[in-house]
Image 1 (cartoon, rainbow, N blue to C red):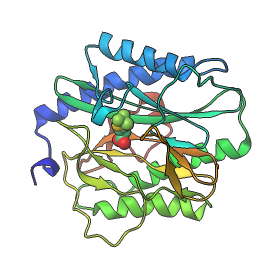
Image 2: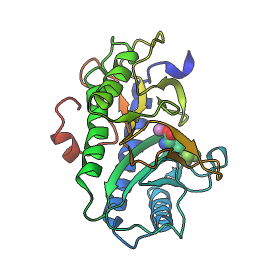
Image 3: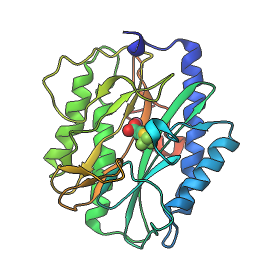
Length: 262
Ligand code: MF3
Ligand code: CO
């Protein structure tokens, strides 16, 4: 299948460039997170910076999506639409999902941040969501089945009492933002796919503190938990290798604490 084929060396280099640029967007937005900031301001800044880096926001107008990033606050899981009336409050958690196209190659990542001081429960949720990703990374090696990555993510979440969203998943990424294969975040009986060096994937656990049931808002985009519990999202674009996966959207500083990736 064309879209699952390993990338050429040239394509891999282009993917690195696109994804490294996206790190700068997160470094910038992270500084802005504070009580009183609106999600519209975050969107405006992300859009400005992506374009000033020579990229194009790949979310903007994706199937009609009306902004350049997704900002999902508290019980919103993903695809929250930035809005001038959404003012961050002390104690909120906000996930920012962003991506760009550079020279025809896509990047995609998400981080969940606390606004000021957050509850212990919120911190544990955010940390567990990140750990789900790293549990998956232990299996994200050429020759393994992608299903082992999915199972590791989902099992970690459920063993720690968290819910795993079933309706949304990660994906292949490269010349398009969403390519095959789907990267599920839970143990599943599908045939899966044998990973090959050079494949590029967006792996993105979406985890809730309560029930895993979600609902869509009337805006057609915003996904929230049905029970109102907090939700968290953590996503990186990765490159499969013969050894540890290369995480294209993590900074060296972030990687320092995570020996399971390079
Ligand atoms: N990063 C998101 C994902 O992979 C893409 C969001 S598309 C948008 O699911 F249109 F909602 F922006
Ligand atoms: Co994605």
